[in-house]
Length: 353
Image (cartoon, rainbow, N blue to C red; front, side, top):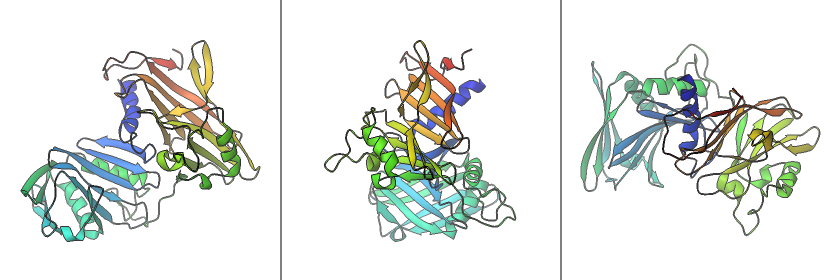
């Protein structure tokens, strides 16, 4: 049973958001009725997906800077009366907390309403952790809608955000508060969204790679970096790991290649990824639908046999070392039959049992 839990913990990050933003979410976890995503810069978003025809999601997000406040986000199906206000109520056994937000204070962009950082939202988050339900009264132009949201999972989500933003025990934590001073979170990871931000030795290999990483990159072609993004992970004061797009994305499989660069040596190389081949151990030079876990220094990939994600190949590698380090295959699972079954445990191909 523990193995099955680990498997689905691995699958989840790939199924959430990889279709449109392959590297946006570095960390993802679900706590009962709430979802938490933390981006590469450790900005974390707490969302409840409405399950209602009028509400797509409601949420709060927070950057990883010291003493940063929360912002409120809302995505709805329909036009809101911008001259009116949004009313929020948190119900608990002891009391009722209410917050009124004039829609004129918010910004509507790409279908999402955003209300900028405010201490009011910090108070709201504290009440949400104490409460039972959150009620939204939304002023649509077609009429008022009242939607009730379960708060089950909010407290665990807040602790998870504190952990990932390195606030546990600090005075500015959401839940895991302490006497420690507020400080900015530190991360080794940054996004790579343009070719010019990649060192020339890496870019030269990327351009000449037999995997045709640059096949659609050029002045008049699709910019792979902007479209699919990449990551740079600082390993030492000289060595940096680059996870870069490699070829244009398919319908549900997005390909990446891994490179390492040492500034002191002025050298770069592409890194092979061990795998289990038909006749034994082999290597592959690209990975699909990838996920970097910076805490564990592991790199995972999920090649989908079809878009549903009920078959394919799951691989996880562990990184160790500096420029001369390597990836070690620590687990691989494969499922050939696309049968719609998400409950059974995928057969393990590595380690060999």
